[in-house]
Image (cartoon, rainbow over all chains, first blue to last red; front, side, top):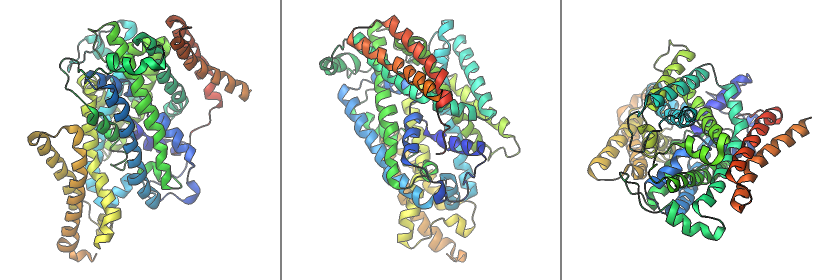
Length: 474
Length: 58
């Protein structure tokens, strides 16, 4: 679930090559990339450290085998279609980064606010990845792993492991992460196969010795439909929606405009299927099998600690995979958070502001709640950033049909476009009301939220462009 | 030389995934599986950096 790092990699790779990054202009025809670049990138980017957490967390919430196998299939399909039909068509027409498009639509000040929100989300996401790596680093020291119900650190060893991992990742990110990005590219094919191997090797221990054994055992042992004590019950729609919104900020939220601006045609959006069905299907199922094996061997051990789970089945390679998966994805995420925070700390060096982002990520990682409640955090992360995707969608496709101007902030020369700002903030307020008073779970809020944001932006644009600023002459 | 390194790297990937299939088939035990996966990891990381191309954007 880490393609938010792609823009960073793109930028970094381009910087390293001394190439034009096209940060404030459209990508020219000569710099477009083939389909293979996108397939490889998505396949690699979605085998991240957090995949080790998500599969098991579904098990803890008592989903059934059907919920997982079919819910993930359809949810991931919706995610792919979102990339293909929402994000990619605008990307290949405008060919500009999401940030630049947003600046042209919303104005520099509103984009700065968005950047800070984005940076904070990146920090917490990186924190979850630091936590994942820490579970493997602590194994040789017999560190007590955090439990499923632990919100606070449960041992000094956990704090030390998180601080050590966080410090290394932060310093490396602050120094620039080209070497790590290259290492991540090398590691990704191997990591994908480790996920696959872990899942296959776990099968006999669960009692699956032939394909015919799979379905009965999957229902009776792995996804039993019964949540672990203290966990809420999830079902098909939770799984379906989670798979769809796991990368909400990237597809519906339009963050991957920055990626697909290099695509020759919108059909390249289907390349995201490589990431979804490798990382968010196979890897989540494999991780769930590892957790189910742990529960079968020791029913009292409900801790979702990827390090011990992977070591149990894959030994040293499993531990290395957990550390590398967490490290190589946390590193660019912290780097991107640092970039986002630079709008707040303009006089700080890139090194210093990235260290600040790393410190925030590490501070978050100390609290196991961040990973034990990862599903809820991912829901919140996507929801907070997604309304701006609705704004971009409306701005490109709908506003011209309403005889309104797209990229209004740029044309009117305003630093803060209130129609976009109100669409964002009021949508989130409305979601809070739906959550608190209408009882709609956070997993399902993003669907009404998109339509609310779209309606608010369209209505706000009419008010601003037709009535508030006629002097703009637009 | 490059072909040789590529062969080593592919051998590493094979050693990563094949043992799990053998475990599933009941012809390999867990300790051997872990050991061969470890060897696969070493082979991959020893050889892959020398033949994999630099990734260009995106």
